[in-house]
Length: 197
Image 1: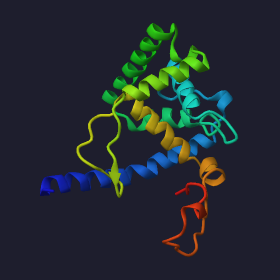
Image 2 (image 1 turned 120 degrees about the vertical axis):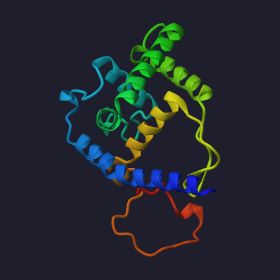
Image 3 (image 1 turned 60 degrees about the vertical axis):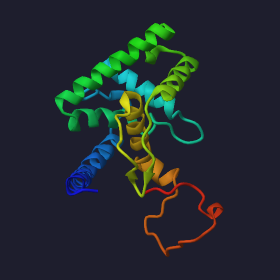
Image 4 (image 1 turned 30 degrees about the horizontal axis):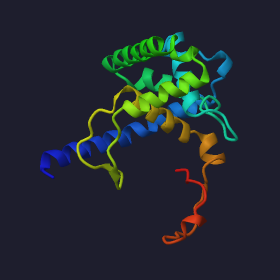
């Protein structure tokens, strides 16, 4: 690794560390928002319906809360409003419109109005055709990461918002607010759920 790459990666890590508290405060503010009176900050009504349908299809309510239960869509709207610059916001709107146009030509309607079966088929097709994230070693991507596109980046944000919510962190994932001893070598069967950070 040359000096320029090292400086660039250090700057990216510093930027991520600085942004994390802001994103977590946005996530906490969503928990107080009443879904019945939610007015999107950035998205218009149709775009908000798309985001809500998207996260609900990816993370539906089962025996555990769904993405709508923990207000992942509200969190994403706040992220778009408060952390995206104008260029990124314009691209997001264009990508939502293109995704909906593709749904309309293939399935006959915009994504939010499709049946559950058609939504699932649509997302399976997007999953198969979207570039993937590079594998990671100790949190660092291996090789140069190419852009992953609209579907994969939106899905990644939905997953991050969902698994970072207090409800999921405390009641679905394993959670220990005051961790005890370090057990470095235990059988995988003893681990149980994925751990909340």
